[in-house]
Length: 240
Image 1: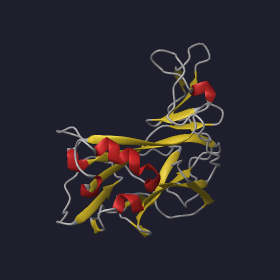
Image 2: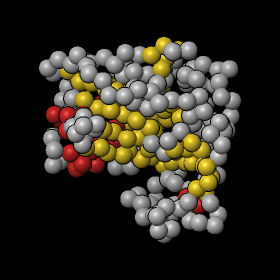
Image 3: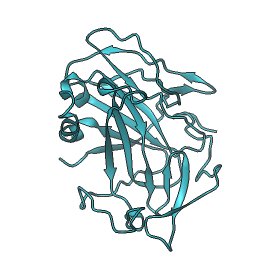
Image 4: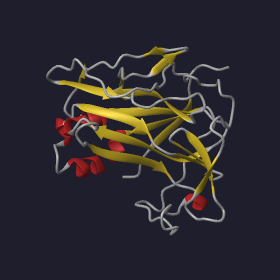
């Protein structure tokens, strides 16, 4: 199934703040989502503005109000198919159009991702610009799982809603040798790389542009670069 997206202008007063691995007071039968594992910077291109399960917002460590008001990471009760009921809202804070992006899921029931390896799965949406679609190691063109997938048209200030149900087959395949997807109770969510229509990339907190002389290579821009007004949607819903 091709991923589906709802793009809308929003002013949700939620966000995303960085951290690490923590211990949680999770009881039997409860689920837990942690989005408190990215180190955010004011020049980040994309922020998570909301995570919901079955239409209800989940408290997962999001940055909600300046200067440093953070959601708690709160266990909750949900059915065994809770992942299929999950949506993740992302805000484009820049003044540019994003055409491709990704999220990384880490499944903590399979390991703590720190002392013990854990199963992880990347959820990708949209289509990478042709100028960027090369292997960084070999310089050869990339082969995509969905070559005809349509690029996003994710404009400045808009919210992209990712429906995890569109990725369940891939998630089940990835977990097949570890645990049933219905046994998942703890999930880490982090942002991946995001690509703009002109070929610029934001990844690991830095912006870069494709190197015209070396396919698959990028030239990093200054660490304080931001294509827009840094105070806008910091956190989502707040403007400078």
